[in-house]
Length: 238
Image (cartoon, rainbow, N blue to C red; front, side, top):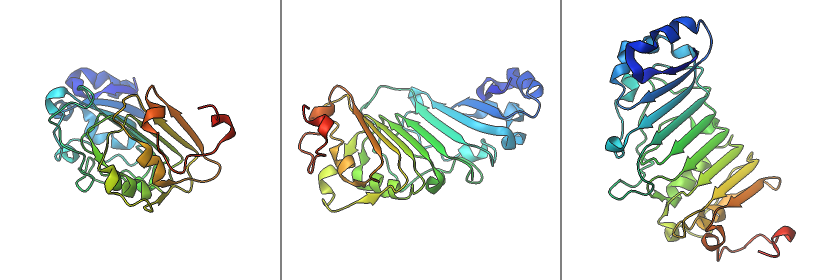
């Protein structure tokens, strides 16, 4: 009863009633008009996880009105946002990190995990408190803007990037660096030859104890030419 599809309207009323005071895990589809027919607005303190799904017809919409539908969620720990359309679909705007929509009436102070899939926009959340960040696919994102955003993620412990479309990579000076002092795991998955994510790896200053995992069918090609390339014993045969 604690896993609630808030977009289902009045049919989820028994879930709210029978979940008692337990933490809630909420799924919602955009647009969120149906959520007004549920007690979601009054249950914000019980919400621990929110998964927002955007259908294909809204794949390029920046939802500036969501703060009127999503309740203040002071105990929210994980936010996941996904857009259901083809990967790298043409006609969608480049990610503009200077304009991040406010999803909640107040920033969720306990949010530690952010998961973004196939997005053309990023939400306004306390990035300096995130410990887990997972970004997969999506429209092109300016590499300098992305690195600058990561520079605010000073508490980040695990970062996962899957087929992230890096844009304007050559416009970043080679000495432009961003530190992630608490990072324990960096995972890069590269399955398309045009996704040259070596610029992302080159721009990060990682602690000496970090674990870096690089996977994908085009990983070697996408990292070709990385200087300096880590001279690791296990990589001698790569």
